[in-house]
Length: 163
Image 1 (cartoon, helix red, strand yellow):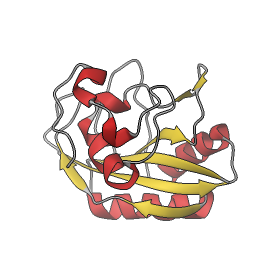
Image 2 (tube, rainbow, N blue to C red; image 1 turned 30 degrees about the vertical axis):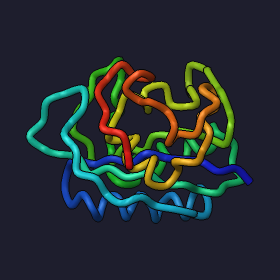
Image 3 (cartoon, one colour; image 1 turned 135 degrees about the vertical axis):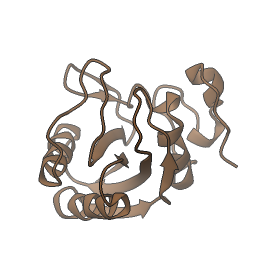
Image 4 (cartoon, rainbow, N blue to C red; image 1 turned 180 degrees about the vertical axis):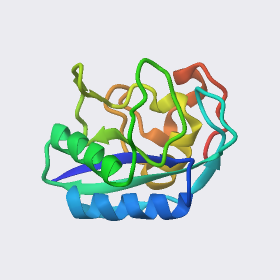
């Protein structure tokens, strides 16, 4: 069984309900939810919107491959009403976004899937909830616990370190 870390985000509709529905879908289609972070309200990243986001992170135990997890997260997004994906760094409002952040210690770089998620260290809305549930997890490329990574130097962006 693998441990998979997913980042969740929503900025449309009943945001807390959207995250809860996503977690239920993850439990049904991917595996046992081992931990769920608090929900964090954040500003949009990469685009302008009047709608703030609600973000969380979840750890799931699964027997699925990374690609099966990716396809099932996309299926859950569609099931919850997401109609378009962000492409070529063009972001927009969305009812749900589920990002595959880490899959055990896997390092994958294909056109379809890159692990660990290449932008996770640049995104405070990803790292705050992830650090809440996974500060002891080793980043596969950096070989350090997530809680020990100086995210400011790793990402080149300002980040208020978690605890």
